[in-house]
Amino acid sequence: MNEEFVDVLVIGAGPSGCVSASYLQNNNINVKIVEKTKFPRYVIGESLLPRCMDHFEEVGLLEVLKQQNYEIKRGARFLRKGEVCNFDFSKKYTKGWDWTWQVPRAHFDNVLAEETQRKGVPIDFENEVIDVVFDGSKSKITVKDINGNIKYINAKHIIDASGYGRVLPKLLDLKKPSALPKHSSIFTIAKDINRPTDNEGTLITFDVVDKEVWLWVIPFSDGTTSIGFVGPTEFINSYKGSSTEMLKEMLKLSDYFYNRFKDAPHLFEPKIIQNFSTAVKQIYGDGYILTGNSGEFLDPIFSSGVTFATETGLLSAKLVAKIIKGEDVDLEKEYVEPVQFGVDVFTSYVNEWYSGNLQKLFFHKPENPEVKEKICSILAGYVWDKTNPFITKHNRIVKSVAHLIDLEEDSLEVKEI
Ligand SMILES: Cc1cc2nc3c(=O)[nH]c(=O)nc-3n(C[C@H](O)[C@H](O)[C@H](O)COP(=O)(O)OP(=O)(O)OC[C@H]3O[C@@H](n4cnc5c(N)ncnc54)[C@H](O)[C@@H]3O)c2cc1C
Image 1 (cartoon, rainbow, N blue to C red):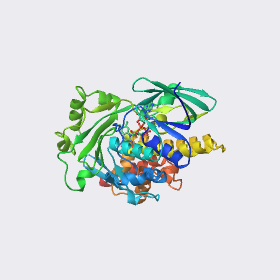
Image 2 (tube, rainbow, N blue to C red; image 1 turned 180 degrees about the vertical axis):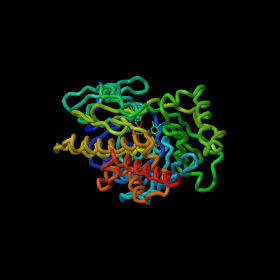
Image 3 (cartoon, rainbow, N blue to C red; image 1 turned 90 degrees about the vertical axis):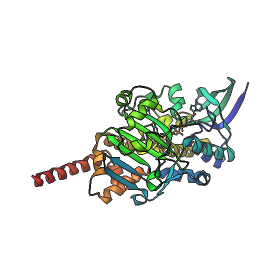
Image 4 (cartoon, helix red, strand yellow; image 1 turned 30 degrees about the horizontal axis):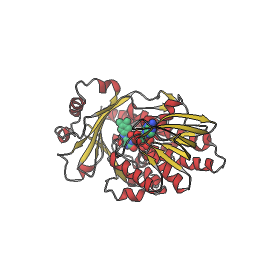
């Protein structure tokens, strides 16, 4: 029988899996990745946050990324019918990276995977995890290759970084419905034939075309640009025809970008992801831990997906390394608590975005620099800084500031009368 033994099996070679496996390899843990597809493969999620640079740096994956000439992202621009709000990561409250990249994920993930292999981590591509049987914390994983051959991997611990594959949530019945409203997305990568040649051309932008509907524009250094709409599922589904026709029609909602993208050829037929928010009942169990999208995905509005994937990928690897070495680990305290805290902060901001309160703060003039720098830290992914009141009071502060803005606007109206 084809049987292998490893200390840690990582499922999935996306950013989360590569960061996890690199950390374990650097710390002399016997680790292997099993990856269902052949790389390079496309996946959505191209706008990174500065916080993930810390993770790539810590595990030794940053230098190779720096050599790829990816488009530098120094902030984010939000538009709403002629109003503009710019965030500059160098003007954020929390210390840390003030830039990152906009990356075509097929290329980016392939660079990460190759570097992870170069470090000595074996990656079995075109090998899919199809079953797992636990005996205490040890597990026997059934893997099927592209030709249908079966092999078994015995692991002391599993890190499930399978993203939308959600391998263990499916096999162990851990899935639960997300508490967020049902949103969907339609997107493609366009040949940016009308790209302006000045700074405007490469600026990442979120164009708010309606309270709950927005368009992302994420230019890459190779002259292509990722474009996609997000909105309530019934809104996306209200468009008819092929996905190309749907996206073209939706583009008419964006006064700002319509001309730039109306004739831009698509690199592929636009894809649709329905009801993308996911949740799970638990993010660890005896012998396994879930990271990145395999556990939770909220919403793309703050581009937090990859950063959350690398944050949890790194933290889980640190804890699993300790477990393998026989050290005591309290996963509830050391994993669930910080992960849940980050999820809760982002959830508040996602909810306040769609309630309209956060948009009120973003587009209010004159800007309040003190409020802005604190929100900027969150947009940069530094959501564990408990000196930032916009983090510690995340569940009420946006509402309160939006309320003050309402009062101010009301009193202005009264004065004008
Ligand atoms: C509409 C939309 C827009 C988004 N935009 C952004 C953005 O701008 N910025 C951002 O940071 N995030 C964004 N995201 C989120 C982003 O896509 C994910 O958070 C990120 O890719 C998660 O990384 P990961 O490493 O957890 O998983 P992935 O990158 O999905 O990698 C998981 C890997 O596991 C493999 N796998 C799956 N099943 C199996 C199996 N059975 N056996 C073996 N391998 C398996 C897959 O093939 C895959 O390669 C967006 C998401 C959506 C829905």
